[in-house]
Amino acid sequence: MKALYYDEQKGYQGIKVGEFPVPEISDAEVLVRVKAFSLNHLDVWVMEGKYPMPVPLPHIFGSDASGIVEKTGRLVTQVKPGDEVIVFPGLSCGACASCTAGRENECRDFSLLGVLTPGVSAEYVKAPAVNIFRKPPGLSFEEAAGIGITYTTAWNGLVMRAGIRQGETVLVPSAGSGAGTACIQTAKLYNATVITTVGSDEKIEKARALGADLVINSTKEDLIEAVKQFTTGALADIAVDLVGADSFGRSLAAVKRGGRVVTFGATAGDAATVSLRQVFGKNLTIHGVYVGPRAAVHQYLPLFPRKLRTVVDSVYDFADAPKAYEKLLSRRFFGKIVVTV
Image 1 (tube, helix red, strand yellow):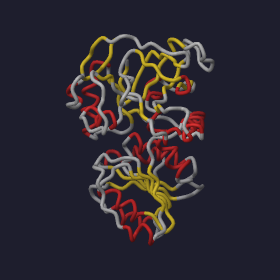
Image 2 (tube, rainbow, N blue to C red; image 1 turned 135 degrees about the vertical axis):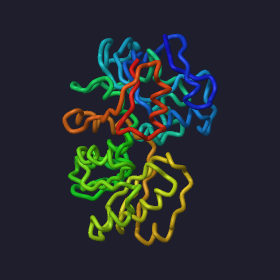
Image 3 (cartoon, rainbow, N blue to C red; image 1 turned 45 degrees about the vertical axis):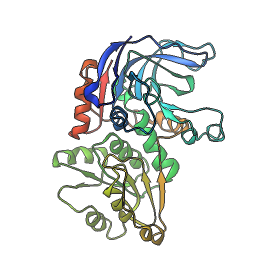
């Protein structure tokens, strides 16, 4: 099979096209013919050698994909060859207390396709049958490829962990990121008042079209002052922090007493200065979120495409994957960037 891979961890510039054996599946696995995969910042961190564990080389990368079932193991009953599916990337032991309680993203062995195991940037990928979900009718393969990590993280963070309630005020930075678009859509399911940020005026109308009630250009306005003014001093009930570094301190300042902060990203850096007095003085709850369990997928997937829908910024051909990653790092996009296979 053809695959995109790298044999040195020197960034997206090292991506190559090569031939690899088609994966062999076990009785409880499914072989999927990949139609499209979407990009995540995680891919880049692994490519650049920043993942804390050694990555086998050469390495087929990428975590989120959609495709068509090519072959099923002997024990697989929920899908059959020819079915159009989404590949959920979370991998765990399946037997520990966390896994059996439905919190497999807390398993000590939890990882994602494309990190320590071969990923989805190839003509075929194998995955446990429990990770294969039927693609909702009405979604393109490109839209379906952008669901996995993005919507699972948004749903786990806002719904399962922070316990979003009807009519709350939610701060979601970086409206144009894949996670930002997913969080805005998820919050609006609960009739939330959504405050979001963009880095350029050209993204303002796109954020409003998603349902954002206040869009702040972070290059021109002070976030905390804008939140105070918009909420008449009440501040937000929930702040999502997917940027890290200095942004985390602003998230703490933007929520009211008893508020919740959800953190699941560090694209600007993972070292943050935190005021502990602000945390305990405001009775804040901080939720650290890494993707989510398969239970989240079962909850949100039926909402596609009627109430949730992936925002696709651009689609690249297989051989142009390096250009796709170059765009991801440029931040000049709104939504998910997808590569077709």
